[in-house]
Amino acid sequence: MTPAPSTTAERPRPHSLRELFWSLTFLALQGFGGVLAVVQRELVEKRGWLSNEEFIEDWAVAQIMPGPNVVNLSIMLGERYFGWRGALVGLLGMLAFPMLVVISLTLIYTQFADHAAVAGALRGMGAVAAGLVAGMGLKLAATLRLHPLGKWYCAGLALAAFVLVAVLRLPLFWALLLVGGTGCALTYRRLA
Image (cartoon, rainbow, N blue to C red; front, side, top):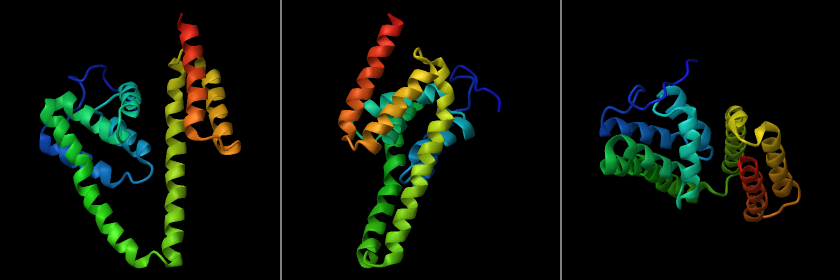
């Protein structure tokens, strides 16, 4: 795979608001449950609209903004290429058709919720989503070599987060506060 060019002018980009809308709609329709892997593959690897580094930086910003991460990212992407109109189209592309699908599925689910096959299908979808998130984590782990703490400290922080949440059953808020705070403090100290 060839590295993406360094500037947005040299890289592929959406040619129109229509292309942006349908691309984000397609992305939203395939991203139920484990969207990080799908978003990275579509925007970085297939379309080349973002470099891997830009994706990680934008995803970090999208996570701290209020609202769903992928919606925030679509708004930022639309604004980057088309200004406020692109931000609005990014929002609509991410929400319009998926909202119709969710409403339709809700109506269907209310009719068949008691069937064992439906419960089994939902458990299977949860396993697939977990696998997608784990695979994406492994794919993005390569960028840890650029982090000031290095890959081993970062791996230790990830392991600590796993132990706190999965083993000790600490609420996610407190685990993020402890591990995230430690990571920020260590990074600040390393950079200072």
